[in-house]
Length: 231
Image 1: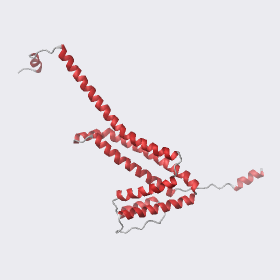
Image 2: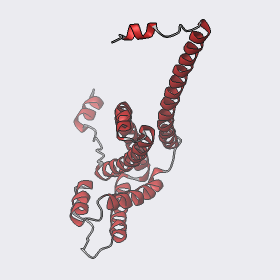
Image 3: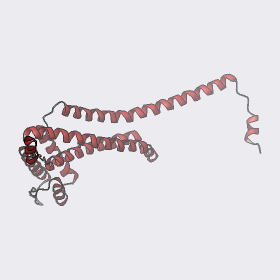
Image 4: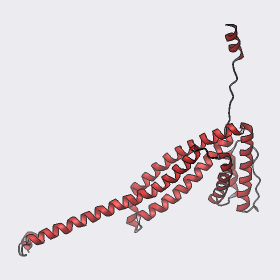
């Protein structure tokens, strides 16, 4: 029985031209693999870059003086629709969630016959009334400054967490290929769902923070003022 070395000895030697061609073909194959790999990385990055641009546009709009008191009406409407759909209209879950939004006892009244659209509308009106009352309590000028500060803080905090989650996802997404699934397609789906959840969570944090914000006005120390005047 011939060994592999012995079997190789019976073959005709390769010409230098053939060897050069084999090396060239191998190099071309490696370059194509590297290019495909780099292209795939760029495609992953492109998904996140689009989301980053959308987030920066939102942040810049706030810094440029967007009227957040008026915009909050749209935010509340979106939040109500998303939350009812996410909770699949389950009455107990919706009631439990509304209780996390404000310490106040006045909660919207639902019945088992209430449709999901009606539930979303009830939540929308309830949150809007609470927000309007908070603006009146704070005064429009103060409320305007606070809405800006709160939403910027929420965006920055949630965006940092999201970037960490997406980095972790990109690291492990290649394993999806073993299940005969395209990792890039899977990544895009996960990124789309993740970004939708990010926006919904940001809006929820913002509304909850605004409904619970309290402004304390420090009163001057009368005795200290009198002492200064006496001195």
